Image (cartoon, helix red, strand yellow):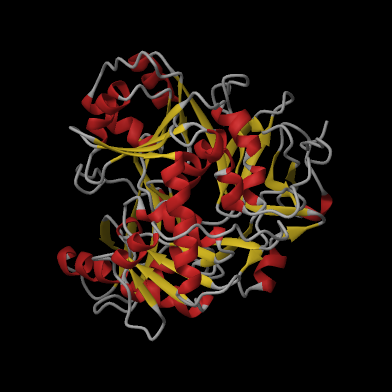
Length: 513
C-alpha cells in the first residue's frame, strides 16, 4: 500500500471571489454579535461584526482614495494591535495585495523585503522599524481615520489572482515572498472542520500577536468565516495570564504554539477551564510529554497541525481523528498528499511504513501561486504534479503520519522557520570571526534555540556579538549562545556537517531560552 491519498476533486471556489468578502460574509446576519474581543486583565475592547466590516470596507475606501489601485502591493509594518487585521482585510477588500511582516524585523531586513517585492506603499505603525524610502507611507493615525469612511464595494474577480503575500525563510538564505491567491481562504474550510472542529457558537482564544500570520488565520479569519468570536490577549500579557482570560471569557477553543502551553504549565500545575473543549497547536512539533501534561492539568486534549507558509496546515488531528502517540495526525479530508521517494521524488510514493518527502498535490486550493519574482525557485519545488515540502514523514497503514524532520537544515525557533544561511550571511563579517555556522539545538524536551559556532584566532566576548545580532536580525533569528571552535565539522568534500553541531549540548538559563 502506497503512502498517498486520492480524495478526488474539491468543491470549486466560487467565481467571482474576494477573500475579505468571504471572511465577512456573515456580518450582515450577525451585525451586533461580538466578532473580536481584545482581552486585558481588567477590561476588554470589543468589536461587533457590523463595526468590524464597516472598518474594513471604510479602510478599503481610504486606501483607494490614497491613490492605490487593485493589484498594488502594500507592505504592512504595523504592531500588535487591531489596526493590523483591519488594514489586512481592508487592502484585500479593495483588491490590493497586502504583505504582513513581523514588527520584530530590523530596518535592514525590511529594506531587503522592499527590494524583493517592490511595493506601491507602506502601512507604518508607530515605533516600528522601517528604512528611509521614497515610497508613499501611510501612518497609523491616517489608517485609523479611514475606518469611518463610506464602505467600498468588494473588489470581486478571479479566485486565482494574487490575494496576499507572506515571507518565509528558505535554503537560499534569503527570505522568500510567498504569493497566495484569494482562494487560499476557501481551502481553509478543511482546517475548520478537520482540525478546529469550530462552529458559530465557539469562542477561540489565540495566544499570538495580531501581526503573526498564525494568529491572522487561525485566530481571526477562520473564526470570522464561521461566525464565531475571536479572543486575543492585549499586548504585553504573558502566558501566565492566559488561564484567567480563558476562564473569565469562557473560551471554548485555545490556540498557541507548544512553547506557550509549556509556559502555562510551569506557572499553573492545575488549570480549571470548564468551557474549554480542546486546544490547538502548530508552528513546531508537539512533544508527547507536553500533550499528556496539558491533559493532566486541564482535562482537555491538544490537537496538532502541520503545515507551512506555502500551504498553511494540511495534516492534523481533531476530536474526530485523534492522533496516536508518535504521530502528528492524518491528511485532512480533501487533501491530496503523498510521501515521495527521498532519493528520487520522480519515482513516486513510497510504501506505507517507509520514510518519504511530504508532498502536497499541485492542485490543492490552499497551495501558493509561487514565489514572487522567483519562477526557478517555484519550479524547483514541483515534481510530477506534487509540491515538495522539504520535510520527511512516515505514513502508517491507517493514514496517520509521523514527522521525521527536515530534509534541509531549516531551523525552528519558537514556531518560526528560520534559514541558517540567512543568519550566517547576516553575521559572518563580524570582526574576529573566520567562519560561522548556526543551527537549532534541543536544549530541553520540545525546546529548540538557535546557537552560533565560529572559528577565529580566539574566543570573543558574547555581549558585542549579541548586540551585533540584535542590530541585524529579528529577535527570533538571533543566536542564544555563541561557541568558539578550533574548526567547523566538515565531510571529506569540505561540506559543513551541520548535524554534528546539533550533537552539542549545553544548559541554557531561562533568559536565553
